[in-house]
Image (cartoon, rainbow, N blue to C red; front, side):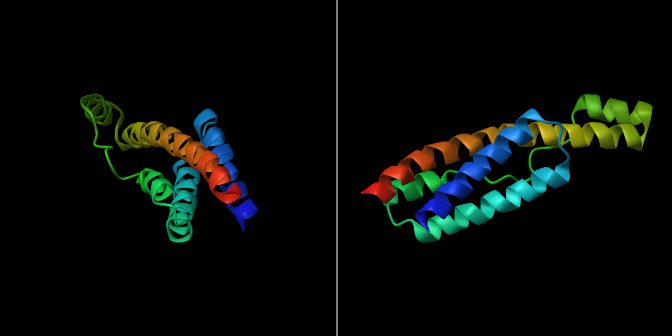
Length: 122
């Protein structure tokens, strides 16, 4: 089971790198969010070390509906370009915000991977 956990954590980091570097859509980000949430829940149930549990609990949730209120530019663009332009820029804003959180998630899982390697070897 230890190898499976470490493999999944590595997979999350690889997927995060791909999402950060490539052009992606909201569906891909949503699937990644579901995967990381499931892994976080599994780790919280499985790992008994309090120090590691605290780090796992700090992994941010990737909620695409949070913090994506339209800015003044988006309001102006929606007035000029109509709803199609507004939709494109709103989605882009969501993706850009999500990529910032994905970076945090990747970094947290990298730290947790290191901790778990030591935890499993002790």
